Amino acid sequence: MSVPICASPSYTSQLASQAQVLIVEDDQSLNELLSRQLRQRGYQVTTCFDGEQALCHTRQQRFNLILLDWLLPRRDGLSVLTALRQQHNTPVIMLTACGDEQQRIRGLQCGADDYLTKPFNITELMLRVDAVLRRSGAVIEPEPEQQAPLNYAGLTLQAEGLQLCWQQQSLPLTPTEYSLLQQLMRCAGEVLSKPMLYQEVMGRPWSRYDRSLDMHISKLRRKLAQLGCLDCQIQTVHGQGYRLR
Image (cartoon, one colour):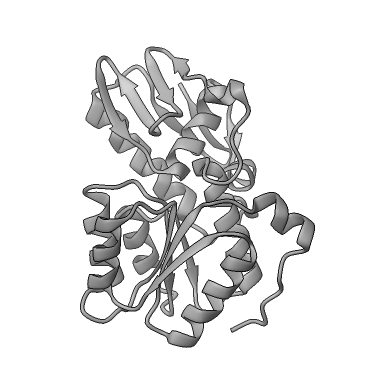
């Protein structure tokens, strides 16, 4: 594991909040390290060590973010994530010792917002945590104009509850899906590059080997189809990026 680097006091104070983070990690030393780092950044932390315990916690309390290990006793992380997504759109960052691309894709398909392979740099994880919580509104409230619903061709994106609405129907979005569609709707008709979307939505630089953005686009397309919204399509512009038409 990379040596952790704590955030500066000024940055920590800006992010200090009552955001609730659940750590689900069976490695006790790593669990304690993550907990200590998150508390130093001002977050409220709950820890557990197996999948069944994690689901028990989520039934009793609402969390703003879950750090979820893949290989867990009693119930694996993918099974926990699948069960969570049936009732909650709580942001989830998955942690795993396996760097297999197909496993990463499965995690994203099942609803993970982000994915980090062990061993990872603690500072990078903390920055991803901050980015996900900012996107979900749990840390820093958006500006008033960002709270107003976005409309495009009959499609409505509502900040409250992270809802996607079309003709009296609605579906919940994860914070990452919401932020991604928000960018596309604000620049409807324009091609947004992958590097730009990675920086603005995922909070990290683009890598040609990272499929995270593609999977979130795929999930948004499925949700648009599920609503029966045929007037709005997310188009892939080969070699350039994506646009909403």
